[in-house]
Amino acid sequence: MAFGFFKKGEKKEKAASGSTHYFELKVKETVQETKDAISIVFEQPANQPISYKSGQFLTLIIAINDKEVRRAYSLCSSPFVDADLAVTVKRVESGLVSNWLVDNVKAGDTLKIMEPMGHFTTEFEKGRKRHLVMFAGGSGITPMLSHIKSVLTQEPESIASLIYCNRDIDSIIFKDELAKWETNYQGRLHVIHILDNAPMNWQGYSGLLNPELLKKLFERIPAWGLDKTTYLMCGPEGMMKNVETLLAQHSIPAEKIFKESFVQGTIDKAKKPAAETAFSENKVREVTIRYDGNEYKIMVEPKRTILETALDQGIDLPFSCQSGLCTACRGKALSGTVKLDEEEGLSQAERNEGYVLTCVGHPMTDDVVIEIG
Image 1: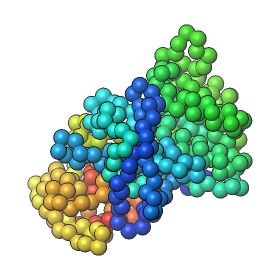
Image 2: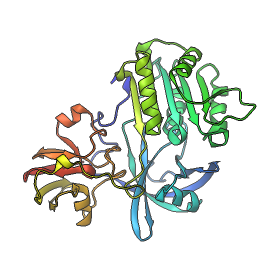
Image 3: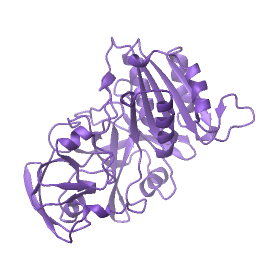
Image 4: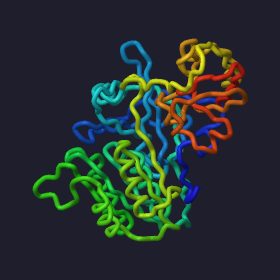
């Protein structure tokens, strides 16, 4: 992909080779970013530090009400700048895990995590010269901060522009830290805040990010030409769809636009009903799963996913969002046909090669064989 960024599903390698790795990490400290958001800073394991890329996420595994639940949170730390790993968690309505973390996690606690994953990444090179234009909303700032730290320190000729949308001034996560980076790298980082509800003395932008406002923003950020500019977005789905539409109206090619989707897990929201077209008959089908050197055979009932069935039978497969977006549960169907309720997490090229997501996958034939890892 242009400039090294990967859309979800386009990077074929795992974050680490072989099966999924799990870690027990000690919480070094928690930082109150806003009244509703905290950053959780983890100590790196002393014997073997965890490697990761800017833009990846950690899956936190928590026991709540005697049930293990998982949620993915983007890393706000940079592997080039920060000695420790950090994620930022924001309180959300009916957010089972996010709210538990905000209310309960403290320094000295130990949390189980899954290895860093995700494809909202890029390679940084000293000689590269590019412009990263970032659109973030709310907690969507977390992977952007990681990218900002990395690009400013690793690519002396590159610049970054951040358009950051929030409800009000008190909800701006990393407000002071962003200002610090903007000051220290003057002329290379441009931060533009947009508030839904701006105070009387606010001198920045307010209101909706509409075509008129976007035109004004484009006049404020450096124009480097399409060949050197990449557009990134992370935030609420509504915001990102609006930004995509606005960028298209400004003739920005789709291949220059990359996004990271934040979703609540299935425990936090009503489960998405399986597509009616996915089930042509009421039939239990056998699925063979190859994972971590073992082979498992499971019988998957209609309207049950492959992941659900495997977990019920005690097979510890990797997963995170359970919504078909994070790709932590990705595997390759070596044979048979698998129907997905949600396909956004995979690129068309990956689907053509037979990759599937077990968390939203249903076997449609009796010869399905899936290899994971």
